[in-house]
Length: 344
Image 1 (spheres, rainbow, N blue to C red):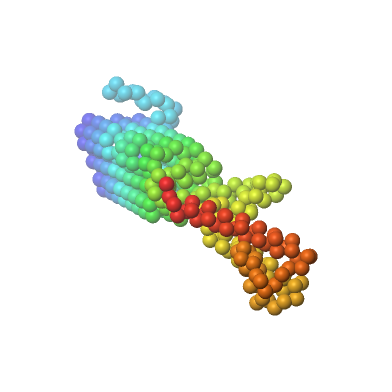
Image 2 (cartoon, one colour):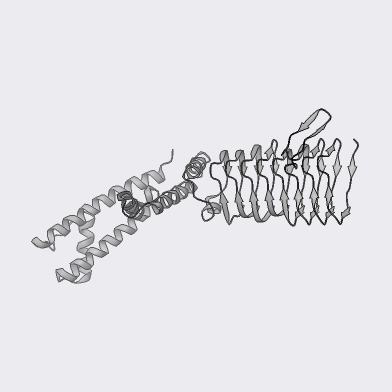
């Protein structure tokens, strides 16, 4: 009923507060749990302080063991996790083994600068602001099917593997966060603050997630990030297509010539390759110096032509082909450059 203070305590063996109701403040700051710490099905009606706590063994704040607890007119059904009605303070805590928060309910949660090994927040509910700023997840973090009703801060956090599939976010902040693998499959978010460079080599491919991210970047005026995400999205889709599919070859052509419409310099590189290839062709079979063949090829490609040489009958079709490729490259370059330079 009153404040409960275990600050600085050390528990050598397993500790169970399963199904306990903490009606006032509870202090577990700087506590050493050297074995299992079991808080499954517990309810914290006031602020719970776990500042600087060491969890050496498994920490369970998740689902209860198939029993119901009834107290003060409240019922916790089987499988319900710990409930934090006020503030859950885990700042600078260390979970050396598994941390279980399945089905837990948080009003406001602070896990700033906390160290996790395996963290389970599956089906958890965060009503207020949630802070994991500067936290370190050294193995796997599971936030699947969780709900974040307010801002979720993960700025400067480090993740090895994180799964957030089927979760709901109002706003999530991943600025300066680092990932090895991150899955956002079927995740619903209104706003996500992140740089594409943080996700580029870590994000598990899911078409719908990529489309949401691209729209998110554009709404936040991160146009370069939107272009890079779109390019990766098209590249991933192209890689999944069969080599016997005509659309795969079309995608490869668009990738090389204009970077799917977001990389105008790809057109310049492709044009340089075409000019060089035709230069070699004219030099080898046209019997002219390479410098002259390059000049003739470039003049033909850009559509100016040359009065110094006139192609023979068997060369005319190749000259015509190069000129057509030049006009096509010009069109692609103008369209792509316009798309990139003129933003909505």
